[in-house]
Image (cartoon, rainbow, N blue to C red; front, side, top):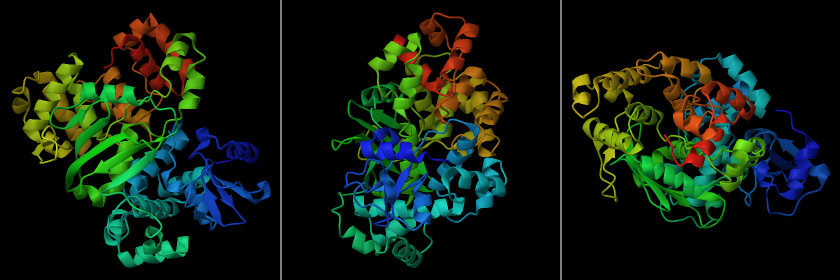
Length: 478
């Protein structure tokens, strides 16, 4: 990805948080690379080198700064077809798709050739998928060394390394120190707890209110300061808690010890759930030009588009919520989770169910689902959704081609344009998704569907955020 050196230099001089995570600075006089907001004394301009990714900086021999900690930089929200593919590849790598698999496997999952995936990743981030995966594993390990009390062995495997020996060798080769030596410089917090930084502002209260109203009984809960839920990833079961860190522009994520082996995947999913890759300044500047949205953009700075911790869970809840109130949708989804999910013990009595995954839900009979008070057509739609997710006809996590997934969703029974767009907005985290036929949006805009869709063209590529602002203006959210 081409970078404007002078624009990057100005951002570094100003320590501008809007650019945090959008590029990194390698300092040739020290061999260290930093975030643009690094609090250390700034180097001379002639010693600065700018890179589109941490992996590109490490590929040129730079080591991560111990003060600004590049592993904590926010991610990026993909807004077009090219960087959507790169974003999907990054998400796949963060979910450990390349821990044991090959680039070709990830490329096939994303529907492209491995050669094309390499070409696009190198053009956008300056490195190959393999190099990206290696840097991600090392930076995740560095984060866990600094912020948790996990053992070195646990950190090695949680970060995707096949052996402790390989972990030690790569870490020493890349960072010039052993993992144990780096840990000695920090005082890790008790238990598996990490900080997830974001670009301010963040409308934290609005996010919690949104999730609290839609919490699935037995699965999720939220109050004025915390979000908690049960978790199932691969064979691992547990719980997590998220709160706003008192330290500043970060969320604090705490997980049960049972989830330590998949902490990287948990981090990735929490980032998606809370839309931590958002660029609120860019969104606000763009949407604030429209007189319909300007007042609400000013009133709710940093409004995020809530994502999904589990894409299938969100899609199932969306179908169960068709033509019923938000409260009724949560009740029905809770019944469904309790009937077909797994019981789990957590420190919170309210959290006791892990929802069914797609294969388990696909095996549920239509009659059994209907017995929960779910109409037959919706029960059928739910089973077909589960079957499509289980056999890979639809992807409800990271996806390279969102329009393709929207079309695939709409081929399922009971899934129309509104449902498909809403799933794309939250489960696929597509910032340009827009359920234009939504009655609340039409009322908020005082417009016909045709006129609203025409106006929404000016809101691209942030139409999902525009929808959030319009829903906020009425106090009614789907």
